[in-house]
Length: 141
Image (cartoon, rainbow, N blue to C red):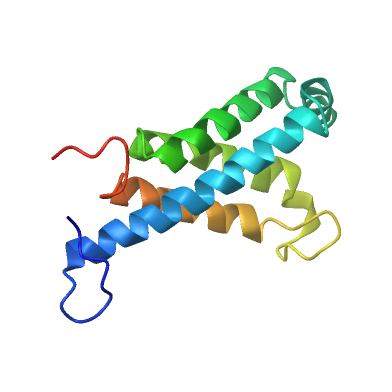
């Protein structure tokens, strides 16, 4: 069983397991919520239409929904974390370039700048290096 202590007695591996868990669950929840907003608020057809309005194929809207919903669930559960996290990086960089690139750096700008999706892409790359962590359905003992 892993030591949850953050004191000096916790090993680097224990802290990495905690970090992986926190990043997995929090980013998984964010992805899940973003995907479900696209399903229930914007609708899949509306999302595809938005993608087309910014010069991308509408099919990428559907693919993005799939990645966000299924990827979010996989991250929360700790299944295929490295691959799912890596898969989200191009989605986030695409959002930064195509969805927010013309709005400047700061995400508080009108329409949201590109800083937040780029930061999130960096976080997902870091999570791909950490992997599942101790508290995941994929943990092998």
